[in-house]
Length: 235
Image 1 (cartoon, one colour):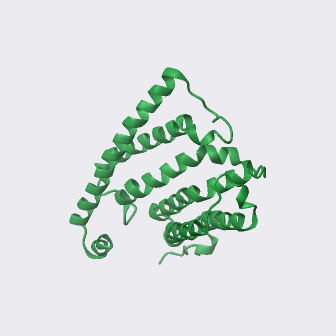
Image 2 (cartoon, helix red, strand yellow):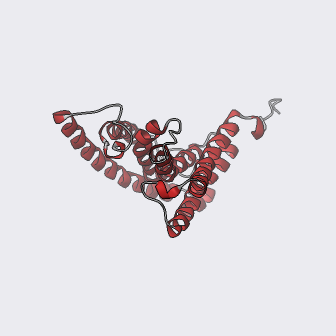
Image 3 (cartoon, one colour):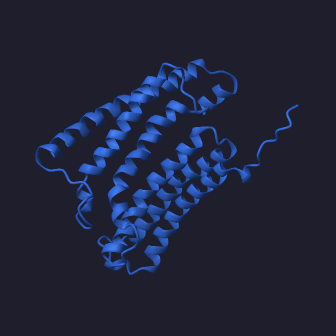
């Protein structure tokens, strides 16, 4: 028998990282509702109605299932990327509720909260990241965190490059959301902007193709699976 004992979960750095990310997701939700109930919401650019608050709450509760399940998996199985993927995706989707309120409070109510310009700039890229992680990466890696086979490494390599290019292009071309705050840190003009927008369209089609690869990965893995993995795939 080996004399090396497994490190308790509470002592692993990965556990505290998972809890920190989960706390960030909860903190964004708490901030949104705390701000809408305590601040002078009538002065916001688009004050929410009571019905909208209920809808937002329902949507946020659904989105919170991602970081909740992700935190549990990351703590219990830190080597499996599925838990971390769900954590990051949950935070990315939560940004869609958190960022508008945070920026509105900073601009409309002149609160000037720290980092609101940066948050306004990166929010579209974060939401795209969450979508790609759930729609493409999750099917590729579910349930054990490994690819269906070694040949899939090339697909993942191209996917990773396309994702980096896509997020970069979003950061330098998506200027519509910065009108109320400030110009984005990187501004393209003329031919460069046209070329960047055209490349975004190409990357969008590439991402669509990768969705098909993800579906194919699920089919391949299901056909090869047996035992516990087959039950997980059925789920």
